[in-house]
Length: 388
Ligand code: NAD
Ligand code: ZN
Image (cartoon, rainbow, N blue to C red; front, side, top):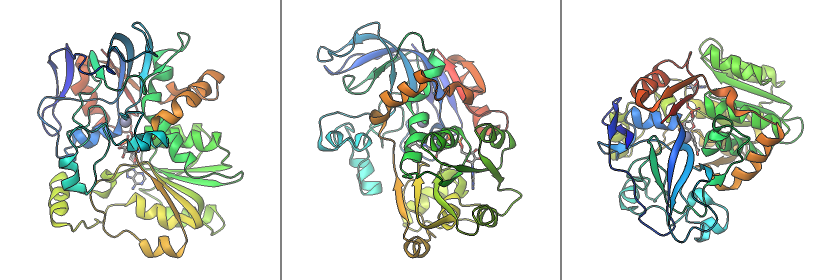
């Protein structure tokens, strides 16, 4: 089959590789019909995740048709159309039973490396390096889905791929980020990053009752997309974000803030990141630091919600301000399995049409061009879909 492989920093290829096979009785093989590139894939693309191997298959946002099933999967049938959550969960461990799906204890078959590096072992993700289980990703014609009896959700025929594809990650991720803000009627929610995750966080915050949403970014096209959802916007390249937010909230600050940016806003290079990880001395840089700014812009007693991805240590974290303001921090990988059915229902009810975020569609074979565009031209490109 054809698959998109990681071949080094800013180097992806479309290569012929072996078709995946059923390995365990709870596996499924999915023929991928649509897949997308995520901001998290850019962390791999730009070389931030040290345990990618040359030839590893990328991709964690995908959907398709079941073509083969292990003999212990009884809730799906060959021919079913499914969306697959990007987090892999066994469904049976203590964490899965608490619905803390993305903290599953069993899905990562080789946790030692992560433990040595981070002091804990994350659960597994599709197509996201050997820190996260080393599973092949879904930017391919076929993919093996482990624990297929707990993850994939069947989707009705009357909804197109593009309407449901983002249930695989960015819609639930934006939604969880907003839900974790514990939004009360009348709240003001400020969101750093108007990328795909930020866009879904904006719409989710409104769905959950926010009176006002403030979106912060420096790409005019992304800020315009935020405005279309009813958000007020701040361009951080020509305004002082803190002053503007204080003006907009009568000096009080936002009731909740969301960092939908992640580590790349810290302007640190991957090499420096490893050096600092090794030296355990991770200093911030002079670049705008979304999380630090978000903490300062959050009102006393407010909530800081962080879907943006971080790894390792983060220095110059204003713990004094966070403590003094009595802030609540919520963060982490999305508990995907919680949101699939409720958000599918929202799409069916017409509360949201997720296709709004798509700006580009490519064939799978054009993946190198698509990665380059999504990485380099965030003005034109907001979300890319690949069609195997
Ligand atoms: P993206 O790279 O397309 O968007 C990030 C946006 O942040 C860009 O528009 C950029 O201009 C903006 N930005 C950069 N610095 C900023 C600053 N200082 N202030 C305000 N905005 C700033 O990525 P995306 O697909 O939207 O993903 C966003 C983050 O969410 C990434 O870190 C990604 O890894 C993470 N993510 C997390 C989960 C999860 O489960 N927690 C799932 C998916 C994605
Ligand atoms: Zn993603």
